[in-house]
Image 1: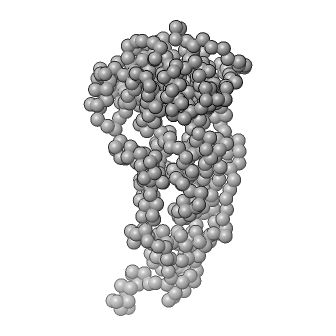
Image 2: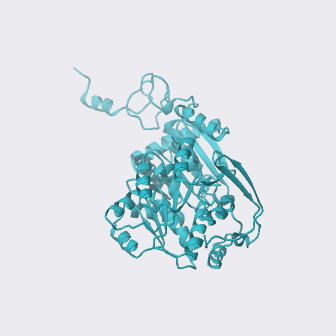
Image 3: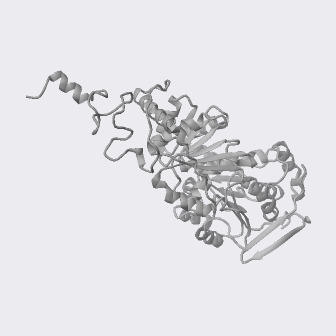
Length: 485
């Protein structure tokens, strides 16, 4: 191809089946990216963005992508995958002509599509290359208008793109290169039919680039069917980033909120993403943290695109320092210097754990990944540790059990009073014994025999001494009405 770069690089190749691992000795200087043969306009944007040395995924993927070869890039999230495919695409589009759009990038979520678009705009700042986004959740009119202007690059989610292809508003017969980002998610059984329908409409002669944080063996076989003699770059996909400190916190379910508040009050806290399984619980927890004085916001599937974008923008610019999210947002969050990722609920798969914790420790910065674990969660933890080939440290804080119980009781009272005022309720705790809710057999949760009143209760508890606690509502009613006849 006429646009291929003529360059000499010292490298060693190891070929094992379809796996080709290339080790490139990249110069460590501000001109490192120039060794790839990138044009002046891109080098100027790279310099202005503050990039100096190519990240490992970039050093190993960019040279092969520039030759027009298919690439499968497997690396942890936060390692620079977007630039690894964006720079070769931009270099190709600058050097060639054709019918636009000439590049199609498919992403699983709206947040990820927006993030890719933002980075491409940064790198294409001094070029004439134009990129647009196409995704659902917003009006299609502006996107149709942008497509009619024939942009160079379309960054899309499959559902809305298929709709616009069906209506005749999206024409992809000029596409020269296609990217599937977060390929493991894109090639999941739920996405594969949509992907195949889109790929069937593309020109057969094209370059295919797949990048992902994880790639299970069965998904890898699907990817191999889409790629032609791919160059594979694999950077320890099963292992967590070395810049992340991992820890497990065994805790009863009803004490999770109190533990979370204590971690967010620590001196090393700057900003955090808290992950839950369901969108309703994420919304409630964000409201609870907001009442407690934290600048918290939820990010979940019931929000409109405008609400989601305002939440992300507010988290990025520091308006909010706690983002409470569900897994739907995990793949699209790219915020620098997140100090903590907290798994309020244990992720369902080892791959989900990898994606969640990848929101911290990005760009070679340090971060902390904490997971709250109840007794029922330990089988899932064992599966995660087996996949990561490491044992995650357990943090037990027995000396703080009573204080944590007091925080739990205070948080309960605050929720009932709908206030985030000072916590004054006191109570005693029981050592964690692996039972969900922390309740002893035969007693309601948190109730101890003979304990004096001071926390809210729903009614009398077996084993309690008469006159030692606040009467229940039914008892007060009986006293007013007198004894039964």
